[in-house]
Length: 275
Length: 323
Image 1 (tube, rainbow over the protein chains, first blue to last red):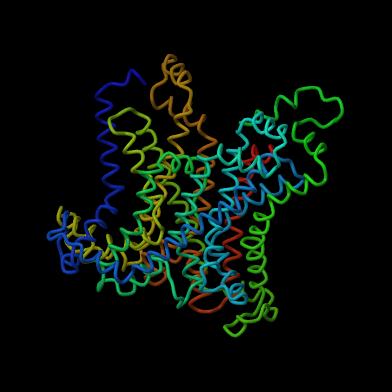
Image 2: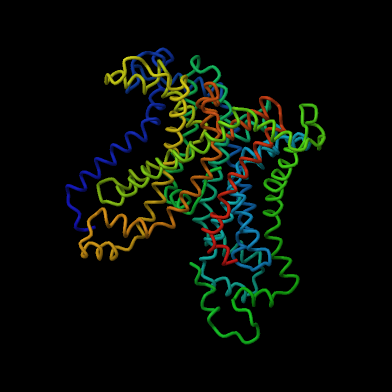
């Protein structure tokens, strides 16, 4: 590696630049578009920069969609919370103790991870109809957690298997209960893995469309994915507002990538993350 | 990683004929402790039953029932045998959706791998700002999928779309292409959007695999006079093969159930030319209100996804062995 020539480095940098231009152009175009008005957006020439930049689309979207943005935030945060509450103790037990059913449970989680969400959504719609969970936050959040629960338990368990055993033994010798060992020792030591799964569970809830589409209809609240879906029907009339809402929808992912890059790269590397 | 249990396995055990630290722990634990430990698993087990087991079983039952909007309120509907499967499969749209799902998955994975591997090799070289570039490239993977679909719809519109306008500006086309209004182009556009989403996943995983290829191996090959091409095929690829397998299995699982992107871009049209299994199953259930046929198609989708299960479990055998 140290023998690499400057020429190679320049060529590689150029290649990376070209790749990034192609890969990030869609995002660039949406951001530029969100600052244009409808006439400019529907014109016949492409503007690489907004001719008359304005925040009009954003102020319009905040006033009409502000409530939906808050709803989406609530859904994302509670999805993350629910995933943590379910996954943390389970991962701890599966890593630390040996049960007769451990292999079966881990195998079951691996299979749960590959089940298509649309299959679950179809059934949940009919089940929720009977349980009166349609159009409710708890119903939607319970469904959204399905993206993250199997992945989170598997990732956390793998991480916890790597924790030094002697520290946990010492706690046990000191007479700490199972619960205390878990809360005082295992949780703090697993901090980075916990952040990784929380970030992904939040993004799963924030970006979910399948469950919102099937489990909400005419409800008092809706996530922004549903709002964007309804913009598709009237595509040309409010395109600027729709683009501003898209940018807002992209924001958490971008911000989390900057703030928690290492955790996101770790989550990606460990395995499958998407619903 | 797996070394916590290995030394204990080798050490001579006097009392128990079965080796391993964990086993002795079980035998030492009192009945009370064992129950206390089980409590940790209760929320997860309940959740898996609620969110996975019951819906899957219920879907299977539904697929054999004669459903209608009137049967929504009752838990079960009259038995229909395999009528739903027949009804769904005789439709030309279903048949083409099944075939299209496979070609779509194959082409997606092919291009995601080629582009992702190329980028991984690129990032494996040293150049200025490569860290920044590497993290920027992750963004497409993190976006809400429906938003990605919408963004591509915006870019690929006929008259006002950026792609057509830029192609016209550089005189590559004289008339705007109907990317979303002509069947062949629409399929290609959905495919491009889906490839775009998956590139980061392939790049990041393959890049981290390349990082683990021992430098001495490459140097030894270089001393033996192997050229770059040989080193790639004889050294690098064989070493990272396990990761390639995982990436393809997971890529298959992600792609087979593509839904949001299709809905955001084309909703399966024009003339069902971009209809894939998941959106078509949704269409049957929620737009034609034929929950039985929708469930039948979902069962087929489920079986296709489960094709990956044995391979996926085998690739994760290490984590099962530690159970």
